[in-house]
Amino acid sequence: MKKFRPYIVFAVLCIITILSGLLIIGWEPGAKLMISSTELVLFVFTLVIGLTIVLYVRQARRNQQMQLFIQKLQTLQDDGSTQAHIFLHPADDLFPLATAVNNVQSLQRHQIKNLERQETALNALLTNMPVAAIQITPEREILRFNTRAANLLNLSMKSVGRTYDDLILSHSLLDFFERAIRQKTHLHETIAVEQGNQTRWYDTTAEYYHTQANEYALWILFYDLTELIDLQERQTQFVANASHELRTPLTSIAGFTETLLSGAQEDPAARQQFLEIIQKETKRLLALVQDILSLAKIGNKTNATETLGVREIVEDVLLSQQDMIRSQGYDVSVDIPETEALSLPAGSLRQIISNLIINSLKYNRPQGKLHVQSMLTDDQVVLTFADTGLGISSEDQAHIFERFYRADKSRNQQISGTGLGLSIVYELVTAVEGQVELDSQLSVGTTITVRFPIQVLASTKYSFAN
Image 1 (cartoon, helix red, strand yellow):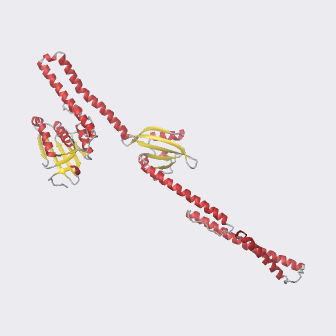
Image 2 (image 1 turned 135 degrees about the horizontal axis):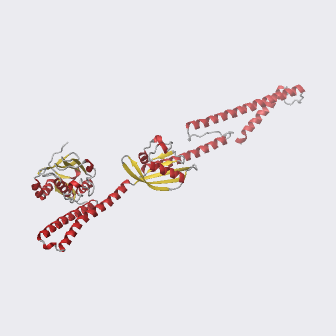
Image 3 (image 1 turned 60 degrees about the vertical axis):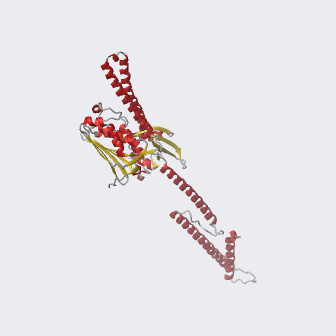
């Protein structure tokens, strides 16, 4: 019934108009209708005028409704709103159009929410993934990237929407990007990138795909392999160095043993000399094997700890080196409270102190000095080993804690050692979250500082220092 209401109203208005025309020409109800030509013209004229007015009013009302409807749509568009709906009476001519618009708005709102959820998930994935990621178009335009990619490629938020040609400086990366765009397929390579004075290696993958808008785009991912490659190189170098260091004493032992068996043992003087050399090389070999085993055990430490007095260990090590101290006239001083004790993995503290003291004595000058000191700060136990020995050049200091590294081999070739002592110290200290610091100057001396976290302190009467 409601849908016919406009037509009923229009019919009523037409009847009223006709009756008005009849009244104008003087017609009375019940009278015989006698109409002259003049009256007929007047009647028709009145009828036309009335219908025109009725149609005009109706059209004006429709135009007003349409204008309000358009204004409402414009307001929604300007505000970017997808929440408000257009409400009209079901009998209104524009009701179906309003319903269609409302349905479109609901669909749009649902799609926007889905896109927002997808965008949030993608941003979370990009932020937390352990690789650098950048999305580009075949036209070389940058669409998005994560923080790791920004750091790698020196990008900022202003880079979005720009082409990468002027932003990426690495020729190897630019070449990879261009080939990925040109080939339009999966691409995977390991690429070296120069960053300052360092070369970093990246496992790089390009994926070419269709977007939801049926367009092409590329995701390029970078996984930093530098530490893994460095580790592999260090392992390879360690094996090579260990093989060389083991081969040297073994070759010497085998050679002198063969010489003795060939008849040299008949000469008492030669026999004594060769046996002393064999003994020396055997001790060197045992020391090397022991150091290698110590390094192997550092990464496999159990939770077992031992509590030892620091001064007691220092004095034990110095006592074992008394022959060297006396023969070289070293001046050794110790400033460590007798009550100070540290709890560290079994064997660690003794090996750290032993390696540092023996190193300081071996590379000291005759009548040189060695001072061993301990102090406490609010959060650290600090041990220092200061000598007046040969010192270490600035070039060597950068490598002094590397395995098998020996500073200035031409200068130290007469000094026995495996080249693993400081490396063992460094790894033992860092294994308990400590630090090792080196301060050295050629021909002046070397100071090595070991900093343990305060948690390793077992007992002391030593006052805290600021």
